[in-house]
Length: 256
Length: 319
Ligand SMILES: Nc1ncnc2c1ncn2[C@@H]1O[C@H](COP(=O)(O)OP(=O)(O)OP(=O)(O)O)[C@@H](O)[C@H]1O
Ligand SMILES: [Mg+2]
Image (tube, rainbow over all chains, first blue to last red; front, top):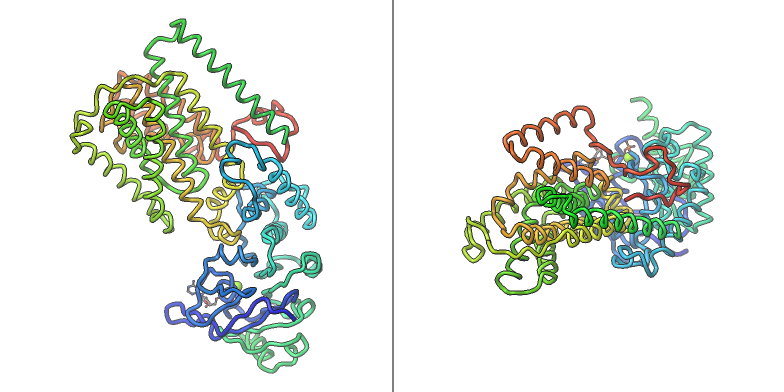
């Protein structure tokens, strides 16, 4: 199996708090991996390090053969990694389709002069971008809302739009931070099917953060479990289900 | 795409008609010198407002030193024609490039930082430029640079204004513009879209500064003089007021703001003390009742009045 992401022993310290400590993980091409753990375990922080929002204080991250720790977030995206946010971050005053079109900026083939003068590849490229964006919106059943402002979408659709936008950057690895948060069970089920489907269709690896163990168990091939910044287990859903420390961590949370 | 091309063509034809009409009225002397001056001023103010809107409205940065770039354009342009004897066209190019280059130099370090550093830097820059000019005898110091030939005509300001408007409109409706808007909307998310946010912020800021420089050259070559008192903080504030009045992020808003405020100033020319009072009162009323400005970030279009505008749908864009 071909290795896509290699996280080597990364840690980050926020003023005395080790939010993530000596975390390692490997993701191969096309895998669907889960990252779970109780509240405040450091899942989002791990995401932020992998995507370049934070620089790890120790350790290194290698993505697709390139060392990415220390690179800026936009550079990591340009190498083929895309993400969504736990607290949705759409371009709220832009239309739904413009949210997606923004994502094609790395692949646009016209220059500033062509854009201003509207000649050369400008019109062809814009047509192509519009078409690709519409195709993506169709997959997420958002084509009818293409011209609405992103902020006016209902919550579940905003979450889907964020995934569509991330896909438009053309990633090899997609990181989803609690994509089902705030959705009802029916929506969640549909979303999980959609996630499985886009992995096949776009030939992606996906790293998925989820609170809900049961949900992750159903879709992921391997799972990493974080607690208080430490990785306490990793393995197949079956192994995780029967892991004593994981059960304790989750029971502990419930007792609290 | 054909719709886009056609609508651009229609707009240019409309501009040409407007130009012919005003030029005709000027020629027939139906519009007297006082209003001619104000029409030129309107065009200059529109250039300033739409270029500031590119920075503050589209890219979401907060620049409050636009008069500084105006001054750089006014003085470098005048030096080119008065001191060095170059033609007006050269002065226009040099004034534009000089202001843009200064914008680039200021933007590069300050736009990397988050927060309001740009506001502080541009505020300081405007004052520094003015004080430097005051103390340089070569450009006339406190008494200003005089004897500038009147090269600016209505035709020059009008067509340069149209050029700037189309430039910024087309910029906005391209991938470059989308990146700027994305930065305004959510910088962290823009970053994860692979957008080098610093690059686009500096680009927008440099372009905005450059066009302010163009306006400066036009300004000094209309009024025969470049004087430091024309480029105080109050001038920057004037331009900002136009943009905010029209609605940050709306080009038609900026244009409307520039026209309205220039008219108000013109009518109040004899009562300068009233001008600031009315300005401030307008702003207070606006902030209370329509904090997003007259148009918000929408564009004025036929559709806004329910007059159709056709099924432009997705490709719809307005000036
Ligand atoms: N920028 C920051 N500065 C200081 N502390 C931070 C920062 N980001 C996260 N933390 C802290 O790091 C810890 C881990 O937070 P993180 O958001 O990664 O948890 P999480 O596993 O995503 O939790 P949740 O399930 O609630 O999303 C928390 O204690 C949090 O307060
Ligand atoms: Mg989280």
